[in-house]
Length: 185
Image 1 (cartoon, rainbow, N blue to C red):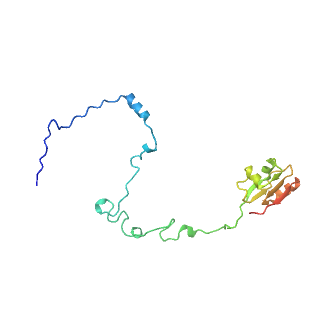
Image 2: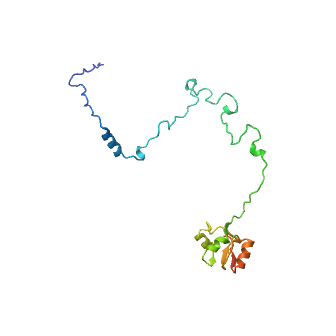
């Protein structure tokens, strides 16, 4: 087996000294900064934004060993512990202690409400759900519309809607208008 001898550094093989870089003036630095293009590719996360995950159960010297930051003994130190929101350590939870009142009907009808005051401002004689949607008085012409009697009518209007209040019916008939009840879709 051959032994390798270290090479001698001679003047011919020596590392050449790099030429000294001249310092840039303040104007050159400012000009260079103004020419830099800033984009999404040049952005970087600030220092401390990416924190390493805590390694648990790696022995006593890790700082998180032995009990793995769970304390010692008890329900919370065991594997598989999972508590729901509002868990009170086995005590009857607040949500079960409170009385339950009220009722929400699953078939409740929600009407879009339009008052006579708004209808009086319209310049058309025939008022339909399409016209009401077009003028911005209702959001969806396919959902039920109810006419309420707030305000007053001066001209006779032919109104088509899904429901009318008692007062609205009286005021429309008094003004000489007609009511047509549309069946919901």
